[in-house]
Length: 204
Image (cartoon, rainbow, N blue to C red; front, side, top):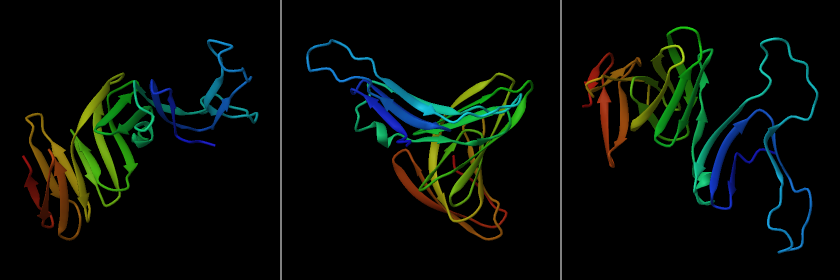
């Protein structure tokens, strides 16, 4: 089965998402204190069945968030969201950060979509958000990667759009057909705003 995380002696936390199964193999039992080290095998994503793959087929997927010196109680609380991405691009969302990369041969306006339970994170750039999901739009050059810090968390009751500028300003637009209320959490504070149909608010 796939537990989604593993912690090694409070020295290393790993949260992962894979296309295969997780397997831990304890090859032998040794009496206590008889050996200084034991070599076991941990497979984060393994597939036993034989498959045939044509050129360009996806053989397997594994995404991992590695946290050195992490306590075993903290590892299962880590968030790792693998977003649906534009072709030849990847995007992962963790607590407080979005990491994305463009592996295509040209500049691409990359689109990353993800679902959430609870407040939805907003990052620099453009985010189109509804009640339970978000689309993040990030322009990336070929081979470029970005590491974006979370600006706020939001809970809207309709379709809205957030856009941040290089000068640090953030604009909220109503893309719904009715008035939308948005609960905003940032810098340890919470506020609620209302945006009329077609309206735009400057949040900073």
